Amino acid sequence: LIEELPLSVTHLPKVRVHFVKGSLLNETTYKRAGITEARSIAIFPQYTGLPESDATTRLAVEIIERLVPPTTKITHILV
Image 1: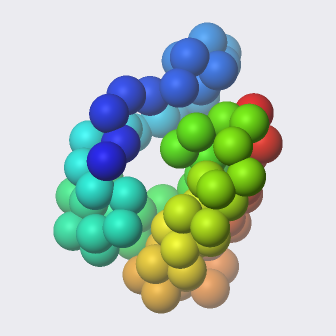
Image 2: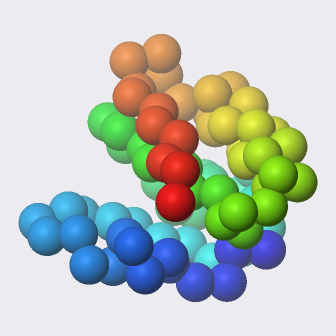
């Protein structure tokens, strides 16, 4: 479950960030966030510093890749 926007994102200047609370592994969460309309997507790990979060993040990337057009830029951010 995505509970809150990471602090590292909230302090970025001039960046339009759309945050939707929901299940990280549920396509509905991403659709509610409007990712099909996004030109770029930044993916932050659910838990920083934990190797286990890499698998969850990879699953999220796979879901997102299925939902967006091939022209959408997808970036995985390490924090």
